[in-house]
Every structure is written in C-alpha cells, then in structure tokens.
Image 1 (cartoon, rainbow, N blue to C red):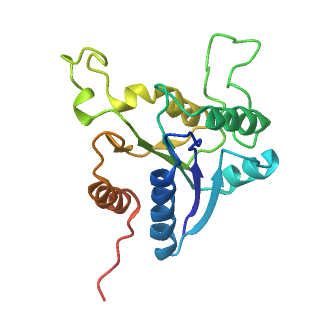
Image 2: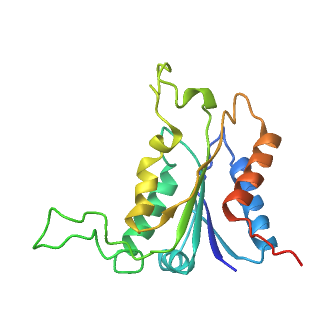
Amino acid sequence: MSRILIINGHHPYPFSEGKLNAALVDRASTFFEAQGDEVQISASAGDYDVAEEVAKHVWADVVLLQYPVNWMGTPWSLKKYQDDVYTAGMGGELCTGDGRTTSRPTEGYGTGGTKEGAKYMLSVTYNAPKEAFDNPQDWFTQGTSVDDMLLPTHLNFRFFNMEKLPTFVAYDVMKNPTIAEDFARFDAHLQAAFGKVTEPA
C-alpha cells in the first residue's frame, strides 16, 4: 500500500472551469483507491492550511501534480501554493535548505532534499497540439519537448530529492479535444507507472 497525494493545480478562468483537470484527479484517485492505496487530495486554488499541506507532502510516497499549463508555466494559484508550502518545508520536512554550506558555497546546490525514495508525476493539460513539441521545424517551440517546458516544476521536486515518473499530457484540449482518448491514455499511463503485479494463484 502506498500513500498518494494528488494536487489539483487548476485555477478557474471564465474560459476554463477546470472540469478536465478535476476529472483526471478523480480518475487517479479511483485508480489508486482500487489498488488499496491511501489517497489525499489537495487543491491550490482557494484556501489551504500551509502546515497541513507540508504534512501531506511528508506523508506521501507519491505526489501526483495535475494542472493546466498557463502561459508556459503553472497557474498563478499553484505557483503561490508552491511558494507557500515548499518554503515552509525547508526546515527539514522537504529539504534542509539548498544543500550548500557556508564553507563550500559553490558546491552541492539543490542537494538538500529529504524525500529520498519518494516519487512524483506531472500530469498536465495543454491547449497546444502534440505536433508543436519535439519538432525543430516548429516556429514557436523550436524543438522543445514538454518536459523541457516543465523543467522548473521538475526541478522543484528534484530539490526535495524525489524521483521523476513519466509525464502525462492531454494535448489540444480546447481547440481539438479528444477527451475519451485522453482518459484511456491516462488510465494506461497510471497502470504502467503504478500498477501492482499480482502473483498467479
């Protein structure tokens, strides 16, 4: 049995209520609970208790961060959540500072994480089409991959010494949505990353 923290990082906008991200959070929760895992769910929009959110991260074996990519980054309420919660966890809960010492200030930056053995997964929704990524001929992204675009968020978790799991992406969710196919791919992605192998009777 694993302890799973799922964070819904959607921020509501008039053109985006967050139904898809909420549905993906629900699917993930159902998947993990069916396996017998313990699940807690947080949301970055609205009120949250910083100390409780730090405690959830300490408790979790896996953090699944579900969010829409907004202006090439995280929604502002998710960034605020990260600023609040991750800064509060720098006293040893998530990391012991940045890993450096005053006697060796140029060495070891980013090595202060205290979550060794824990894992994380990013699951994002994009208005951009899949064809915009990993394509050197694309005028805008110029060959950038999705994980390149998500590097700051990946580095947040690496700062805590957490292990990266493969990223899930739902592409083109506003102009050319394929929601049923996205759900099927998401289910398969979770199974591949977290599915428990059952021994034959």
